[in-house]
Image 1: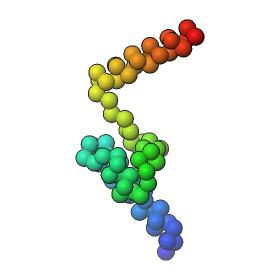
Image 2: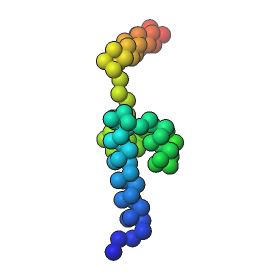
Image 3: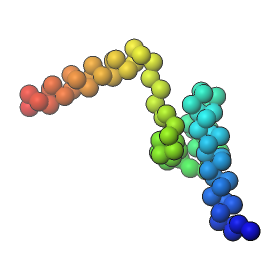
Amino acid sequence: MASKEDTEQFRRRVLLSALGSLYEQGKISSGLGAQVFGCDRWEFYQLLSQHGFSVIDYAEDEMEYEAETSRTLAAQFDQS
């Protein structure tokens, strides 16, 4: 017979798996996922990342913009 702790760990793992899948599919927000899981949004992001779920889903043009911004900032710091 499994202990209560083992049952709770299993419940949390199954819940995180379901929430992570729904989040990746865009069916729930990170705020709702965090609320259901019982943590704050940043902890939810961390847990998703630790369990192999994509946390950030940029569109291609947004990713290019972010990359260009990073290159520009890095060049400014190099000049300092």
